[in-house]
Amino acid sequence: MIKVYAHCDLPCGVYDPAQARIEALSVKACMEKYAASSDPDFKSRSVSIKEERSHQVKEHLWVLWTDYFKPNHFEAYPNLHQLFNDATKLAGAAGTKGSNDLTVADSLIAKIDEIAEIFWATKK
Image (cartoon, rainbow, N blue to C red; front, side, top):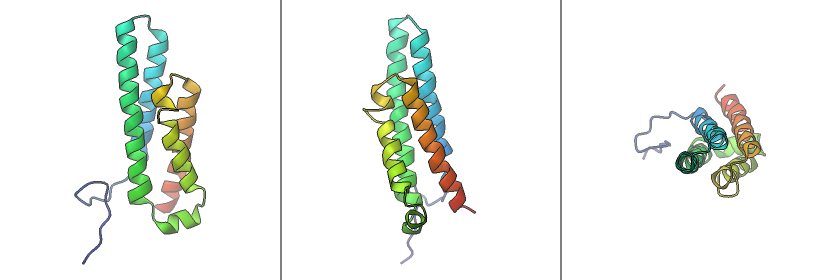
């Protein structure tokens, strides 16, 4: 039996924290547009899209956490589990999904950047 690891049903082996970062930047942009608008319909759409994108951040992070990173990575980077936990919570109901606070979005982006730094170090 051959064991394969992938983030989809076809083991392409393509992983990149940039996917989570792009969604997090979209979340922040939705927050900014929400704050700049006085149109209640636009504001409602902004919140809806922000919540969808926040969930996508979590999905992309979960794929990296559960499919890409292996026990040896967690041994080499003992703070990695905590980084993922913090980042997914920042994208959740107590974070960007449930808030329009730009500082929360910035914190999420910063956590993703920390994860990305470790990710690229493991690719060397």
